[in-house]
Amino acid sequence: MYDVIVIGSGPGGYIAAIRAAQLGMKTAIIEKYSTLGGTCLNVGCIPSKALLDSSEHYHNAAHTFKTHGINLSNLKVDLKQMIARKDDVVKQNVDGIQFLMKKNKIDVHHGMGSFVDKNTVKITKEDGKFEEIQGKNIIIATGSKPASLPFIKLDKDRIITSTEALKMKEIPKHLIVIGGGVIGMELGSVYGRMGAKVSVVEFMDSLIPSMDKTMGKELQKSLKKLGFEFYLKYKVTSVENKGKEVIVKAENGKGETIEIKGDYVLVSIGRKPYTDGLNAEAAGVKLNERGQVEVNDHLQTSVPHIYAIGDVIKGAMLAHKAEEEGVFVAETIAGQKPHINYLLIPGVVYTWPEVASVGYTEEQLKEKGKKYKAGKFPFMASGRARASMDTDGLVKVLADAETDEILGVHMIGPRTADMIAEAVVAMEYRASAEDIARMSHAHPTYTEAFKEACLAATDNRALHV
Image (cartoon, rainbow, N blue to C red; front, top):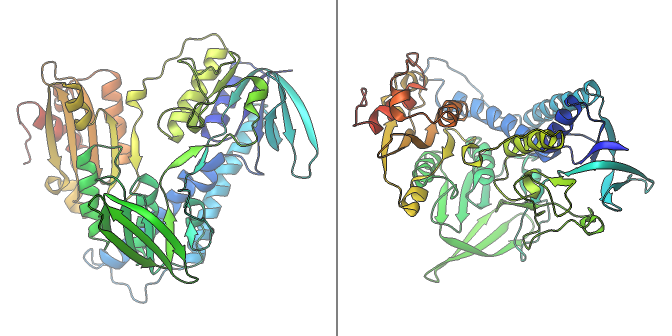
């Protein structure tokens, strides 16, 4: 009998298992696939970042090296090697998880995990053989898979998801991206930087619609420079594979229709919870109408000793959100009283410029009727950004009109994925814009833009604009 059984080995699952083992619990983890790490490590965050970095190197070599005084000739993309490097990065990370399981004495079971009853999990191997294990506590961490539309036939050849986009055999001539969210913009930019024409069809009126509107507008401006074309407020009505050509039809609210022809279509309209084969009902675990596992504030399901974390429950589908929940549940089982402030889990888009955000958006503050002040600072005015030729974007700070407490920070620019951590720390300690404005930031650095935006939010005191 295990103290804790974790079903799923993504960032939520493997972190939950490690923390449970650290706390002295006998722990097992079940993974359907042959490698650990889930979507994030195998076909998500890690491989996409590897390709994003490679494509950015190529783009800089083609477009900015000359200005830096570096002359190259016969520059070309070796896509096969780029994908091979990405696979190696994935392998290193996956091997790292395997090592951590051994180090923490966690039993790893490969196979499909499904409930027999509320304490028993059946593990079905690929060859059909199975075994059963029992646990006092069980954590569901089965993640998510790409969502689609009912009329789109994902052939995984020309009409693809993010999984296939990470192992392309050729650079598309014209990639049509359905969905202007994080995944679509990241993978679209990978191939856009390498010369593909990219057309984006988005149902909402802004890119990355879950983030602050200013970020979507700025990202759109930046991607236009790569040759992206955008069809916002368009609803896709059909996607047809004609062999070597794919035709996408869409219409807007006025009934106007468009037809876009390309050689590949990337369907990136979000992800949906993955509970196929879990047999949750056998344990009495309830799912909601969206297919998510229902949980309370302690992340307990309808069966108190069964918990659920990550993409399979409500909230943002982020690896680091799943990690926080994994630690939270392990510590809860151990009798501790952990806490997660969901407002302060940052969101990041790894395009270039990067987009990063934490706290309330300006739209949310307006909706709440909260009085706030906004301070902005453009990277165009940053000495460090000029030196590196990364002048697109800005930092926007939203602070309480009366107390000056920072309520939201939204950044688009160079290395904002790393810079957002300063804002998270500030907001965890309930800092005011004045607090950050009074702190010394090394010069020249990108993070000075955060200080300047805080100065701008406090009586418009920015020094460099």
